Amino acid sequence: MEGGRCLSDYIEVYDGPLRTSPLLGKFCSGSYRTYTSSSNLMTVRFYSNSRYTYRGFQADYYSTPADQSTTLQCLPDYMRAVVSRYYLQSQGYSAWNLSVNDPHCKPNITSDYVIFDIPYTRCGTVREGNNNTITYSNIIRGSSSGTVITRNKNLHLHINCKMLQNTWAQIMYVAEDNFELNETQYSRYAANLTFYDSSSFSRPVFDSPYYVDMNQNLFLQATLHSSDPNLVLFLDTCVASPIPNNFTTVTYDIIRNGCIRDPTYATYHSPYRHMVRFRFNAFQFIRSNPLVYLQCELVVCRAYDYSSRCYQGCVTRSKRGASSDQETVTVVAGPVKLKEAGAEGSNEHDSK
Image (cartoon, rainbow, N blue to C red):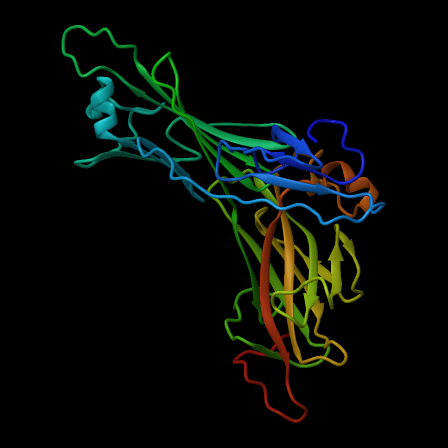
């Protein structure tokens, strides 16, 4: 059965990373339809009211290569747009007549491609945003290869990198009634979580495992890697586990949904908006090995957007219900290992 009459268990398929993306289909039984996404991401949502128990659902998926006439990558510091010279020639455009909003930003032209590396903060890139999305856009303009007259319209290649919380949507399309080409890709912001040996946060700890004493102060810094200075990083959740790839079975919450759960947790002033600094005291899981792994969920928002998650602080699950589909940057640190009784420290620096 397909449509809105599914009342118990059902499946929803969305064309994108979140449930705010277009709904491709909803079904609960007997459906053998095929759905095709417009990007490299598709969301499948399973709903159950736990009233009945049946065999469940089964699906197969496969991927197909994208058109190579134009490609777009949204990298941490810039957008990379690559246009095939063969494609330009087939449409009557010259590789030497391409430019972005700021014509002083020149492409790299090879024998096969025209490559633009377009910074997010220069070359005429426009930044726009609302409560959920930050968009960086530019336009690659091209003209006909003719020298006197042309019957081709000017080429407008719209480049957009859209960020939904922390998920980048990469879109490229050709306008002005030319051959339409749409490309959408999704990736994530680059972030990392690093241990430091003291509250000065001047010397990172690269030891793995990181040997510590019971109840020792552990100092951590989360850093967002982006050239956009108008972004802010928020620490939403940090969970500890004795198992590196399992943060659901045996866990301990240090902070969850912005609410402090561990009494030794404390924050430090950060010199930059894209950094978060905090500490907590070392512990060991009872009846488990002495290794402790840490997984943290970070949220990226526009600076001074006080309606965003980054400025809400501690929120309960019920208050987060409306935005439970938001994507988060997940980083893992560890392992941390307790020193054996009477053993000398294996690390070069002592925590202070």
